[in-house]
Length: 203
Image (cartoon, rainbow, N blue to C red; front, side):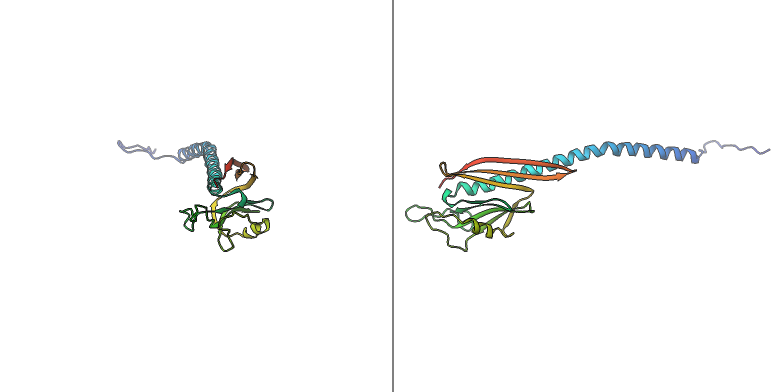
């Protein structure tokens, strides 16, 4: 008869059954951990997207507001529909650092500033137009057709995820009510931020 002995100090290895059970338990633990992390990751991503659209809406609003404030109401043109746009005269020089005035202290208009959105494109463009007859002292607005023709996909992108640009002028108060909507979809849910306010012109 044969007997098996375990020598003192010598450890017995794991059986196949023990290895399989351990592996299954680890898989269960990893699976449960992953299931717990998915909602946390979704929550973090949703928060990140909400912050992004809020920043874009605020950025677009502030940029347009600065140009409106330094312009004249008589030079403002707006467009809606497939092209949403607003244009205005600017007294700043080509470096956007200095307001130009003549010897009588009157503002000398330097260029037209255009902000626009094209249909299907959520990038907000800013465009400077200097290659036309800019009125020197008496502010004159672009025609709607001129404004739409300049909205040709050129210019500098100043904000993303912008869904709508709406501007309504009030001649009595020389002001523009500006509404910017930014929107981005994540997990089949639209995250939207709207910034609106009335901007009074200084010139």
